[in-house]
Image: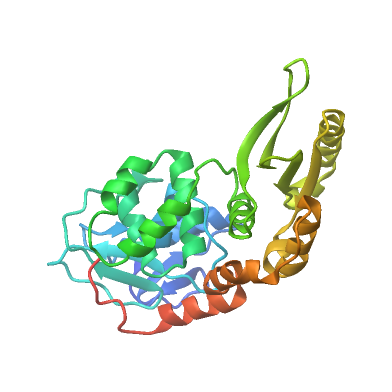
Length: 317
């Protein structure tokens, strides 16, 4: 009977409501959709946030629709409020102080900080690989431009150095977060690639757009996610593979475990393919970046522990 009610502030003892945080409850929805439930939770958080608050960090990035790295099990809601506003302190919420006046942008009906500010706020927590993924998505969506990022990175605010480094690594042409990682894996291993290349046959007819073309070769390297295992897509992919063979292109597909769990085996295969000696030392930067990022279990655990440390979020945004 409460399904039409919005979020409620107070203490409620009823099976018809679920607890969001201390003093915040939502009516239990039948057959809830995960995305809509998250929106409902954000609406609940707005009951305790000051009027000038905006969502930021990963919360805003998700509202913008950007790709996100693999995230820990516990991810708080991130918001920021003005210097003179009272910041609520509740489990599951990290609210920072703004050292400036925010001009909120609306996404899905919620106020979010400017995209460059969102990336900067995330840069204080996330690792380089995580940031590159988010920046690529922001560039692809048009929420930021290289010019706006470059101008933003000339400041000396906390997080700018890491944001500047990630912006320099971003390309902006990838079509998924794992394509971003596949490109960086190649580049860190010293294998130059060109992203999103349109291939044509001898008559100039379009054959396929490939994720990565290894420069100076006929090798097309692509990321294959779970969607490629679905029957309709599998049939289309095999037809595409045959067309690539007809124009002399050798396609190699890679998956997330190839990059995260077996990078040395993947590097060995790449070295054999391009005919160079295998040197495991080429993996040093990749494995270091990976370990610090959310794409590794160690990195996710480290980040979650950081968020769970109370009192760490008194800095301005």
